[in-house]
Image (cartoon, rainbow, N blue to C red; front, side):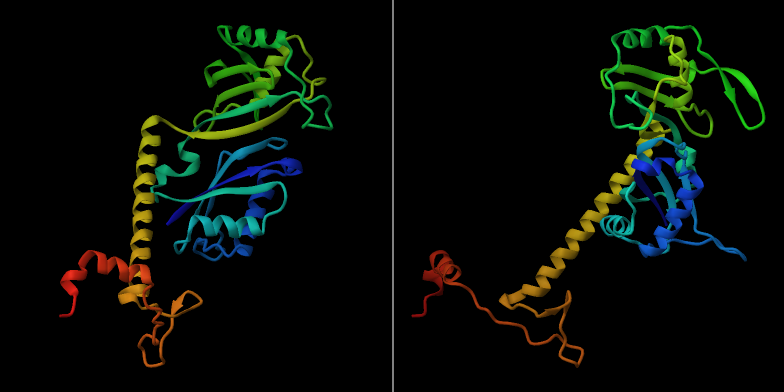
Length: 305
């Protein structure tokens, strides 16, 4: 059984790296009493997989990771328990059961992400955003109109020139910043800071002198077919779960109030008399309105002669 957790990362915790985030959530799982599964062998570890980890210095409203759990737990309960032991800077938004299919894992299906790039007044205060200059708005269109956008992409082993334009799906300039929709995932992955740097150079600015803050809005599935498949599975699962809960409520109401009696409860469980049978119920009777309705509807037929 697998579950997908969505969380946001903000404030000073944007300077915490991915490995520290993983260690943090491992501790959170224990403190929140989430029934997470462990791998086998001599060195068991929590089965946990993050989808496209966030870079240091970025904030986000759409971070995801998948876990395996050993028993069902309601979404509301899991979110409440996780946030109860959370620190400022991280907040769990949702906890959803997902398909156990390996092809539906987070890193496998991620294909794109959108970002908001803002330009703070100073390097020290990312929240003090300046309005985007009108000249920059025009230059965004000119930047995307280029036949190719070649940048020097650095890896751990080498440097090479890469045309990043095919990986920029959309780029829009508004008053409050530049919005990017970029290729993300295991097949193609374009970092938003690389795009921001390339644009600033194109606009005639020195990237080293311009404060930049990047916020990830969300990440998206690989293709429409995968999205439809996931939404179909999610919709049917939630519908079945909702139907089961209504059925459970109906059974509870019938048992508790059958024949006008009210069965006694303690801590959400029906009381017993010590012999395996229900305790004697309360007999509150019916109010006068109920009796009058019977008289009005069937009084002549029930009249004792």
